[in-house]
Structures are given as structure tokens and as C-alpha cells.
Image (tube, rainbow, N blue to C red):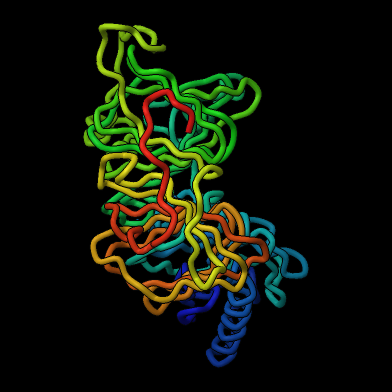
Length: 440
């Protein structure tokens, strides 16, 4: 049974294949005709249960794909059936997919199922076949696992034999990362997006990258510190900063009680790989920690020239009107205030009923992060619903359109990599360049 395009299941295509329908503990063998009838009956019960819980199975697959698209293969669950057909126990009988997230979710879901008509004491084999995905365009932030120091399953962490890796409750990590758009989640090529959470009164130590980085504060208050001679930069909610190639910087949470949550883009890609695997050579080379450096601070005469960041606050940028007045764009980071063509960042606001017609960006990828509202993204012939806290990736040269359905006004961050498509937003200019340390 395969869902068609446009159905709620189209994001996680699963083929339910009844390879076997075996019940141990059932009545002894009888004549061949009776056995065939019994097998057919069990097969119908099994198929009916899978259809009834198909949405749960697809949701499990969706969660598994939030970490990596490299999930496919057969899984067979051995399900013990009790009184009234209720499931009493589940265990993997076959696991070709090798996805702990998928297997755990399926077992938890199956424990709530019922196989009415199956004799108590029977064990039923539930076969599932998960197809590999060629593309993925949306991802819910809540589904993405945490990476970074102290995250469950982080490589290099010391875990007692026989125990599952968990973060230590008494020593929360200074930061955690959810990888939303990268090679493994979206097969991205131009830019990556991560959701970065810095713990209260914590910081990410001084480091630099051979690529550009963009930060946007979703919640809380952050501060960027750099080398002597460059003044600290305070980032409040709704503020974006462009960090040039090679610029040393510290990301610090200014709050002592609440975390700071930021969107973290790398253009081009590379440094995000160290979040997934601290031993990855490409990621390590692109995420250089600067050790033994004097504490960053304010201007120091005679030191290195101050770094010129690109900084803008959404509340202080005049919008450009689109879609017949039903949508607006606030251009935050443009080539004019960053001095670079690597990327553009803006805020897109759309009222319910607004539509963006089908179009294409021949050389630029588009990454969106939905803060509020919702709607439907059409990519090629596929329609994908989206809501708050969802990342969207549209590869370069991919036709797409959007319809905003609400119920609230949709607000989303919009990144083009490289910059260019934003030039069609004719109207109010973006923020002007400013000197380091000046208020955005």
C-alpha cells in the first residue's frame, strides 16, 4: 500500500509488505485448505491493523529522517498478543534499517495496537519495508536530535558498558545543536542551518571558520565577543549578524536564567559537520578553536583592526510589500551591509490567504525557518504542509510555490545562498552599513 502525492503520507513513503503472517501458539495443524484459510484470516487482521496505524508508522519514519535520510530497509517486529488482541510485548525480529530512532518509535507505537481475532498467547510477525528517500524538503525542529557536548550518543562520550548514553543532569552542556539543513538531512549543497541553544551564563569558546556564518536570535539575548580591538556586540531577539570568513568570535548567552536560542547558518557548508561528529576531518578543519587567547573585550589601541560585522534588527527595517499587499519582506543582511555575495537573510511575513506563485532560483538554494503561522509548500508536483518551528530547504533550480493558510500571520526567516534572488524585492532598502559597536 503506497500513498500518492499530496497525501499526508507522501513525506515518508513506507510500503507495507505482508511477507508472513505467522501465529505461534494457535490451534494445531489441520487440513491444507483450513490452514490456507487461517493464514488468510491472520493476514487480513495484520493488514487491517497496519492500515489503522499507518499514520503512526509514517510519523516514526519522519522522525528517523530528521537525523539522516540514509534510512531504508526492512523491519520485522515480533508482537506478543494477549487477551482481546491487545499487544503485551514487542521485540525486533529483523532490523535492516539500523535506525535506533525508527525502531524505538515503532516498538512504542506497536505496544498500543490491537490484533482483534488473534488467539491470546500468539506471536505475530509484523513486516514493514521502508523505502530510501531521494529528497526531503521540510523538517520539524522537534524531531531533530540534539548534538554537541553531552548530547545522547555523542561520539567520544564515555558510556558505561550496557548503559545507554545520556547527558549528565547535574552538568548540563554549555550548548546543544539540532542539525536542520545539512548533507544528511536535506542533501544540501550551498548552506547549512542549525538550531543552536546556548545554556544560561554559558558560551562557545573563541573560534573561527574559513566560511561565512550568520546568526539570528530567536529567543533570549546573546553577545558576540572577538579579538582585542573589536567591541562586543549585543544581539537581542530579532537581530541578525553576519560573521565574515576567518573572524575570531565567541558566542555568549547574556542571560543567567534562560537559554539563548539562535539560528546558525554556514555559507558555504562545512563547520556544521563537527556538530554531528567531533572527529570529522572536514568539520574539524572548518571549526578552529582558538586557544590561549587573551580575554576578548573592548577596543585596544594598537591592536588588530576592528572586525566589521553586518548587523540588523528586524524591528528597525522597513518592509517591502509583496503578493498584492498580503506579504512583506524585511531585508536584514544584504550585500550592501555585509560586503559579501555569499548569502542574503530576510524576514518574510505573510497574512492568511497570501500566495507566492511558482518560481525558481537557478543558482541559489533557499532555506526557510518558520517561526509562526503555516501553509503549504509545493515543490515540483509534491504539496507539503508546514507549521511553526519547521525548516524548509528548496535546492537551487527547483520550481516551488507557497500558499499561506495561517491561522496566524506567518513569519519566517528566509536565506538565499548565494545572494541574488532578493533583488526582485523592489522597495525599501535594507539597513545601511554601520561602524562596529554602533547600535543596530
